[in-house]
Length: 159
Image (cartoon, rainbow, N blue to C red):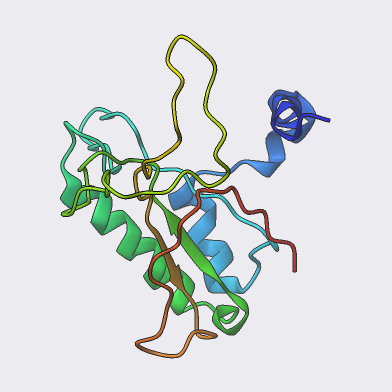
């Protein structure tokens, strides 16, 4: 079964009530302690009249994106549900957009000695880009966290 194919179903009209505007509903749900078990928040990817895009993509103002992250964090932190919240911020950008150190290319072992097919015969002997995820929660001890996560995966959490 193709997991991602199921997302096409979300386009059906019967799911329209599952989608809300950030300013109109999310903050109110936070204040009232009525957040559902799982929430996905998308930024504004385009400038709308006098309201700027608030994503971290070039050519937009990264400051707007960071203000948006802070706004989400403050809404969650002041919610009566804060002690039940795990806030994940995953960036999908790479290639130097955030990274100050290039990924290693020398001395990286092929994990299983299998090469790709001809004509390129790729050896799988280099590391990919790092994709950062920030984990914020009252469950996480201050100053603790994980560094050096080596694989890029999609995670779906159900509590």
